[in-house]
Length: 65
Image 1: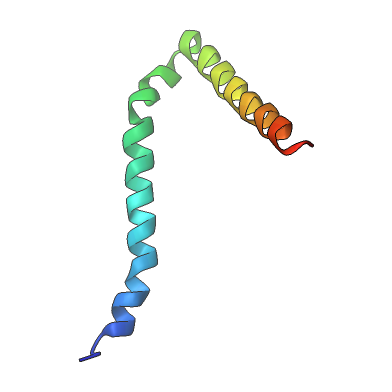
Image 2: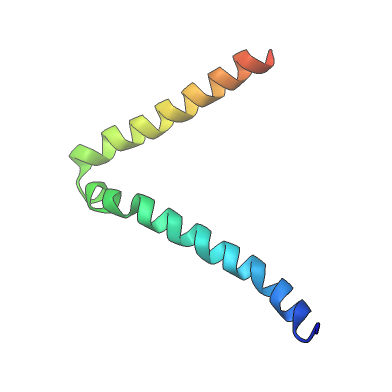
């Protein structure tokens, strides 16, 4: 009844990593051609830093830091 139970349990972390890698690649793959040209690279980097700053300031305000 429990033949291979632990084998299946130890497969789940590899499955999780595979699923997360697939989601990451499918999400950011359309942005890769934009990174090749400097005219679109600079706004994307600015958008990334602006988003991180927004999240940081929002969480600091919410948590009272």
